Structure formats: structure tokens, C-alpha cells
Length: 289
Image (cartoon, rainbow, N blue to C red; front, side, top):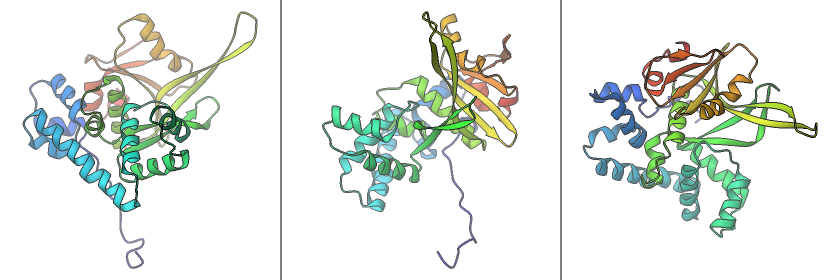
């Protein structure tokens, strides 16, 4: 450490992006390839296996025998069950607002475990250091300040997340959101969850605050993008729900909704850009289309 201090660089290797996956596999059907990527992810060795069973067995083994063993041994964790259970809980709540206190309450009420919030926070840090999880903070867009009460976690690879759920609970909407987050990080953006507070009067005239969420604020230098992940916009009500936060952001930075369905890029009367997930992931300049 003393001999090489300030003389080396850390290179953080990511799992394969969807574009890298496509370049390697050369699939005939991009939609089916995206379904496969959403299920088994981009850990490179998965490409060497032919069947889904082989890929899933590899990913489960990789998680338990490499990631978990590394975290347990390096940090001298004695209660392996709590670490394993915490990882499964996090896989079940990808993209959901949480914090160590809420997770500890889940352990106490549902699992009858007395693990404390400080231990949960420590375990989460260990999983971040092992590049399993990534923590995302929240930012009040209008107030221009961070919100520290709750935050989100995403997995470094969707295949690893699904391995912790035994590939039984897909939750494609949150997996899509996870993939978008990973793609933005891969492109070098700083990413936060956006919060928009709007104030209206109820029937009694009392002012009521409603807190709306924008999935991601992606920033690089002077460029800022507001991005919403929407698996489907199959009804007017769903479209209004997914775009409401974007419509209430009153600055001029670009607003984007990424949908699962492939199709041409379009813009609505509010200046919001809509782009399919395939198109977004395969074009490195998709934020500026």
C-alpha cells in the first residue's frame, strides 16, 4: 500500500451491457435477445452455456460461492443466514424506496429476527463494496437538495438479481428499471432518483403536498436528463401516471420516457420524448435522439 500509493488506477469492470451482449451473440431476434438479457443478465460466462438450466445454475453458484463467500470471509461475518436473507430481501425490492430501519422492521416482524438497523446498514455497505448492489440517493428537483430519509438499491446485473429469486419472480418492470440504471452508469452519468413536490388545495381549502417521483436524473457536466422507466403505457391513465412528474418539472432539460415496446422515437405536445428500450440500449447517443 505504501509503495504503490498514488501510482495505480482502479478499473471497474462492468457486466456486459445489452449492446455488448448483442455484439457477442449476434441474435436473429432482438426482442427475444432482450428477454434473455433481462432474465440471465450480462455476466460474460453465461454466454458459454447453451441451456437456461445451465445458465441459472452457474449464476446461483456464482452468487453463493463467489460473492457471498467473499463478503463473509473478508468482513468476518458470523451470521451467514442474515446476510443471505438480506440479499434475497433486496432482490425482492429492487427499485423500491427503503432504508436500514425499514429493512430491520421487516426482519423483526416477518422473520422474527432481532437484527438491528446498524447491522443492516453495515451489511448493505459490504454488498456495495463487493459490487453486488448500488445505492441511489434521492434529489428534490425544485428544492435543489438531497433527501436522505430513503433511497433505492439496484443490482449490478439482472441475472444476479434473478438468481437470488431462483428465477421464479421476474418483475419485469423493476428489472427494466435496473437495466436502465446500469446503462446510465456505464455511460458515465451520475444518477439520482428525482422527487417533485406539488401543492394543491383540497375541498376544505387546506394545502396538500403530493410527492411525485422521476425514476432517474442523469447528469454529466452541464447535461441533465430526466428519465422515466415505463414497462407499458397501454391506457391513458397509465400514461398520465408515468408522465405526471415530468410535466411538473419546470426547467428546460430533456425529459424522456423509456418503454418496453420497440418503436420509432416520438415526442408529445409537452416536449416529452418516448423511446423503446431496445433502441435506447443499442444507441449510445439515445439520450439525444
